Image 1 (tube, one colour):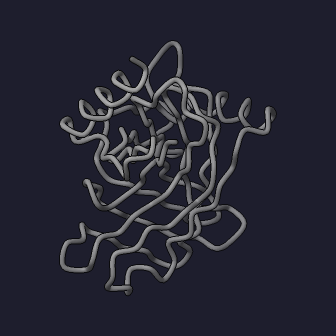
Image 2: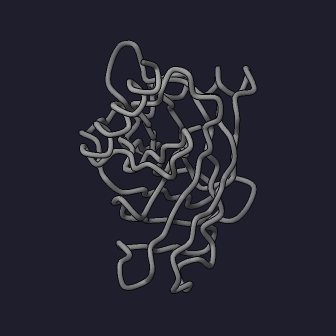
Length: 194
């Protein structure tokens, strides 16, 4: 019965365009997460989710960040691996990196319980995540725009949950930078679940 339910969930997510099976093993690749944009220069501004990964650091400050939401993760998942993928150049969505493409992906506990998803409401959640030493990963996008072949890049493991939340920004240990990556079934952030 358990196997049937898990297969049904994977099939349902795959049909919805949110997951695709990797193999006959109990693996699922969740693609096209929900993406919210938050901005330090408009801390109370909120908007509907976007489809692209888009982050900006300028003048030594994080200006534009993403809050990433992966949903539909099986409750019995043992490992959750954050990745980003790029298709072959001919099938690639828009992808641009200027200067520093090193990202910081901080797992957070969720979205604000009250209010909108905006910079002001996310900051206390991020501070708690840092205090609790939740996983902090560093996906590297610098230099990959020029590569013409399809590639899968492993950022590392996050704590599994039925919904996983990540705050994404240009890493603050290096220079300013901007990363833009359009997302579809073969480009963008993914989560491999086993």
